[in-house]
Length: 415
Image 1 (cartoon, rainbow, N blue to C red):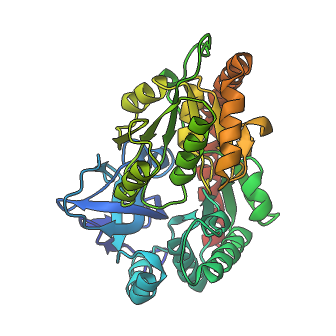
Image 2 (cartoon, rainbow, N blue to C red):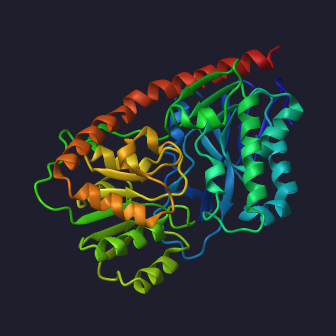
């Protein structure tokens, strides 16, 4: 434990000493990190693309997360650590059983790394955030939350099959409400959707910004022009769980084929369910119509894939504010998505369907692709909307939030 007038040495992947003047921010995050040759790495939560943002306000950032050893990993990984950013691993776990087994070690790690004058930001949902909350509550230490998703949707029926799923669903929603209610500041990835389900304390500072920020070069200058038939659909999403709805999209593609729409589908992503998805593609007779690219490097490779398609489809059962959808909109693609999370804040209701309904999704695809004027209108609207997520615009709100959290923490810890 560290009080306000002392210093501490913690042990992330390398030894780091933090003193009371260090201006340190500690961030807990549920994301999965991979140990590559002794260094924590990630596909998207990397130093350059993600953690450097916190250094605009803080001198040091300590990331607390799960670190897994994966043999034969073929995914494109990049370092998490860099100048000013270090990683503190907790015992890795997958699922409630492993979490309970490692709970004592996890809470001990967070307790031993406690710094009395640090700023704490809990990226939630996720049980790591809740464990950190209990440690901070014990020390009467303030914290802020960055709400990036909705556990109520993640554990909805049909998304995850687990005997205690209903209990987990209630528990995670209840705890996220508690964390938001007791935070000194809260940011949300949505403008209003998550705020309604997980309201912050009326005295707390609140804002909204996405973790997504688009560089200017990723946003097309002009919308697409549709003068011929739509041929190619694309979707992007992890295959580590089934909540991205890939199987629903495949079923809808079968229905489209049966109704005379000869379409092709590009699926970008990777994960443990990839082989199961490949088998399902063969089972439903789509082997020649579906191309799985695997994981593509963010940036040009993703944009090239999006540019090769005519329509983006997001069939997810749950989302926060999906980066892939915003990236597709930035390339002028017409988009169809499910009415979950923050998706309705991005797409018009006419381009939304309920999750899990392949027939309705097929009808919506056919309806949209057969209306060229509508495709042109959607392309223009999507491009305009995507501009709201440019790096310049989002950075202002994010930096203001970090500065406010730092100010409120200093006030509270110096009482």
